[in-house]
Length: 116
Length: 208
Image (cartoon, rainbow over all chains, first blue to last red; front, side, top):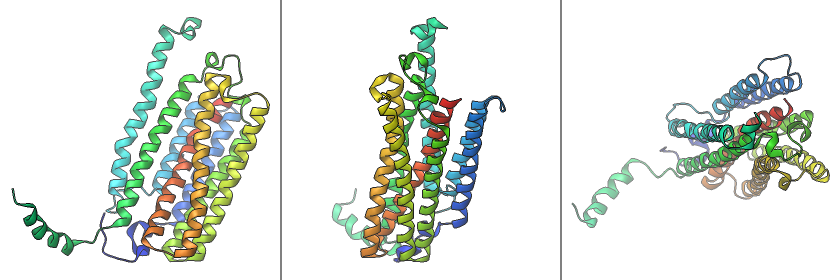
C-alpha cells in the first residue's frame, strides 16, 4: 500500500497492466460463453447440461479474476486478493442458504410442494 | 499514557521519514471494497431470481426462453467483453503514458458499452410491447430487477467513461485522474464478471 514515486504512471497498480492478460481474458470468456450458448441450444448433446454450463461459467469468471483483476499474492495485490477471498464465501452463503431455505419452505408449506 | 503534545512531536517525524501517503493505493483499495459490497447486492438479486424461477411464480406468464433470443444474448455478451478488452487497451496506454491512446480507448470502450445497452433496451422494448412487464409476476419482477440493475451499472459506467475522457483531455495524468481510471477499470471489469453469471444462470438457464 506504499510506494516512493511521485509520478502516478510509475505506480505499481498502473504498471500491472498487461495487454496479453486482457486478450487472454477476452478469448477464454468469449469462447466459454460460446460453449454455454451451444450447450443451451443443444441440450441433448451434453449431460447434465446446466452443470456443464455452470462449470464453463466458473472457469470464465476465474479467468477474468486472474487476467482482468490480476488477483494474486504479489506485494501490490495481496490485500485485494485476500479481501476477495474473504467475501467469496459470503456471496456463496447468501445465494446458497437462500436457495436451501426456500427449497425447504416450498417442500413443506407452499403450493409448489403440494403439487410435487 | 503520553500527552497528545508528546505524540505529535515524536511520531510526526517518524511517519514523514518513512513513506509519503499513497493516495492512489488508498483510494483504489477503498473502491475495491465498495465493489465487493456491490457484489453482495447482486448476490441478493441472484438469490431472489433463483427462488422465484419456478412456473408457480410466473403466475401463468412467460418465463425463460420466451424472454430472450439466445443469439441476441450472445451478441450482448460480445459487446460487453469487447468493451472490457478496449478498456484493457486504456490501461496499457496509461502504462505507456499515452494520452491519445487512453482517450481513444475510452471512446471505443464507451461505444461498445453503448452497443450493449442499445441491444438490451431493444429487447426490453419488445418485451414491454408484448405485455411482458416487471409487475406481471414475481418471476418477471426478479428477472427485470436483476438484468436492469446490471444495465444501470453499464449506463453509469458510460457516463463515468465520458467524464474521464474530458478530465484526461483537460488535466492529463495526475494522481486524481490516474486513480479514477484505475477505479473505473475495476468497475468496468466487474460488469463483465456479473454478465457471465447473468448470461449463464438467467438467459441460458432459461433457454434450457
